[in-house]
Length: 435
Image (cartoon, rainbow, N blue to C red):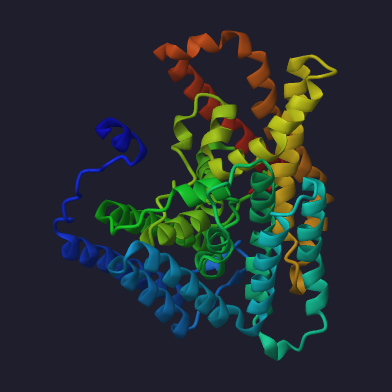
């Protein structure tokens, strides 16, 4: 009888009280104060920019709300902490976009309802993304005094990828333990308004990263990542993307530093926003990766693609690459299916996604997407990059076992860095700007 009772109702040893809990919470709150102070100082100096296009002028009230939230959350229990986080995120959104917050709230409600219907996945995506496209048209008829349209534009552009993740992951049965409350947090968490980040973090990853108790190590990692990310704004503001004059001869002494600076700007443009957003998410309890996994240690361009902004890699792979390979391999050789699916997934999941972000559904930036699509030089540069990502991965598949040797890994890293410098030099010479 004793064994049966234990099997049905497993007992757990009593948990010892967390030692040093007040001190841990105080340290987490202090990290939040330091990071938000750094954010405010950078914004006050006019350096806090998004996408290199215009400054995000946060008012003091918004900084106060975000600071109060990040400082207070470590002192709350797990359940209450999540409720306060969602409520405060809505307040932050209202402070930034004003009455236009009704659109994010409506879309969150609609997406959670539609994702649970028995419709087909294409039908769900059609409804959700159709509403996402329709809202900018509706805002044309709303008086300008109702809110900040540019700030809503940034948030709205960032939702395209997360909406796809939520609908598709729900249809695949990957979100059985994720409730409506968690999905609202996923779509409305305050960094989406405060520091919009273009990386489509998956719903499952986002949900599983939650850590309830105050964690000093996580807070210190948040502070370090946030300060490092803020440094990217200085790089963006105080450097420029250099292109060689058609008449000037190439000189490594004169042009080498400019090429390296271009590479640094590319890194800053891609990494800064996600670093700052993840830092804030870590402060409130989400133990998420930075998004970049030491890209200079890549052993191939395919490995670089996996390390460089791996949230985009996971999104394009799970949403496009794997389903396409599964379908194409039915009527063509597997290697050809890999190549075609690779090009298509990078095209749609990365280049296409970032052009949707560049659409800026509101305001004067709506032509950016179409100008980018007609940029022949830019497209050729992207195609060249896609080629060095996709084709070698297929060609060297038979010798993958050599990866276990140190000489192979070191050689792969040297070749990858050399190829990257060569591509950067090619773009510099031919006037191609790649971000």
